[in-house]
Image (tube, rainbow, N blue to C red; front, side):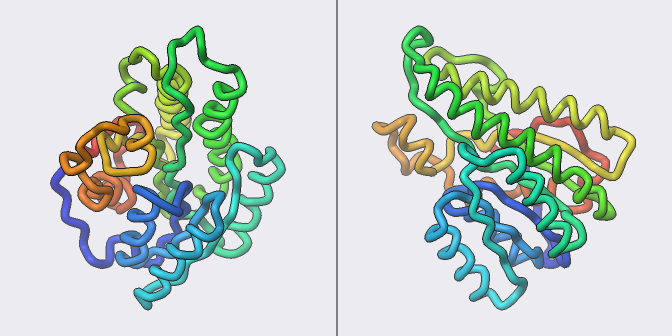
Length: 244
């Protein structure tokens, strides 16, 4: 997508981004702050979140907030409290970006360990379900609100050895479609983005021998995210977008 975001695209919007400590999440968080948003940085590694926070503060635009949450270990109560905190501090939420994902281990289906299967589903599916469930009322407080799920090419067509991750992304797309259909005639919109092959740590763990110089950087794939976060997309819901 060739989209040019205006400088004030996200002015006075509050945006929560999961997996904001590195990769696409970090890059998107900084860009959102540049465009005027209050950014809530959610992740499990506080030191990484603090580094992103410092970069945002240095912009002298908007403030950022840190929400340390381990998506693999958080209980339903955590997500209820998280939603209460966001509502109390900001009064609304304009956008939620489910960026955090867990790859697991690539292996033959019969060798997938149930513990690893559960961890991938917990991070990629269950956490997104609970967070969205409790934040929908907070999103509804905004004039228009956007929720972005992260999918993958293996969430559209299954691929050998990608078992847990692939299945989790099929589930992610299904969840997005179900919620989008339920809220079709509302101010809430729900879409999914497939980032494609991007220069991130997760990509490197899946393809350790790959020539990274051939990959797009997170900075190069942000257009579709910004389009879906801004008001030009308020009529767009239930769709799957490829960032490349």
